Image 1 (tube, rainbow, N blue to C red):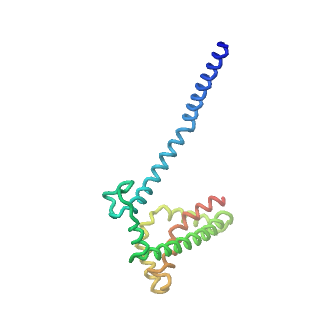
Image 2: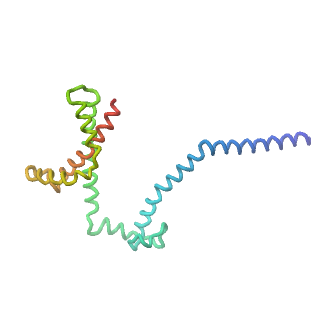
Image 3: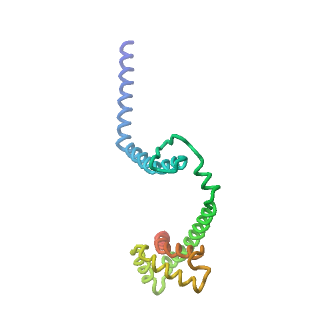
Amino acid sequence: MAVGATVKAQGSAGMVVGGSSRMQRWLRGRGWRHLVAWLALAFAVFPVLWILSASFNPTGTLVSQRLVPTRLSLENYQELLGGSVPYLSWFRNTVVIAGIAALANTLLSALAAFAFSRMRFKGRRTGLLSVLLIQMFPQTLAFVAIFLIMANIGDVFPAIGLGTQAGLILVYLGGAMGVNTWLIKGFFD
């Protein structure tokens, strides 16, 4: 009986040692990845929590802000949604403009990318290199030129000039067409 008890104790001790070595293998193999993922998640979520906490702070300042405010209030939301600021109108305009620009950009980029990827035509290589070359310059270089173009187009076609939603959609389309065309062309290839 004593011999059997000793064997069981050694067997259970062997299981504990085997379990801890399995845990060490997991930590060395995959565990550190989980730790890095949790740290990255915390790094990404912390600013969102900070701003959400600040939105419930009735003082309206970030100087004395803490992650957990001493007093919670919905005053900021009441002022934003029911006050003199037309926030809901601004939000609706943003969603409409971004939605139309995204759909039109995806459609036009897919059409151009399909032509560049599947069809052989004169000027194909020149067109692809031109799109690539234009992407190399920062878009901030084009601000003045875009402003002047939109101001002059507004004189001829007032519906797409400065201060119009259609004009803003056209500017968004022009700014992202090259990148999206290259991206979708790579997919088609």
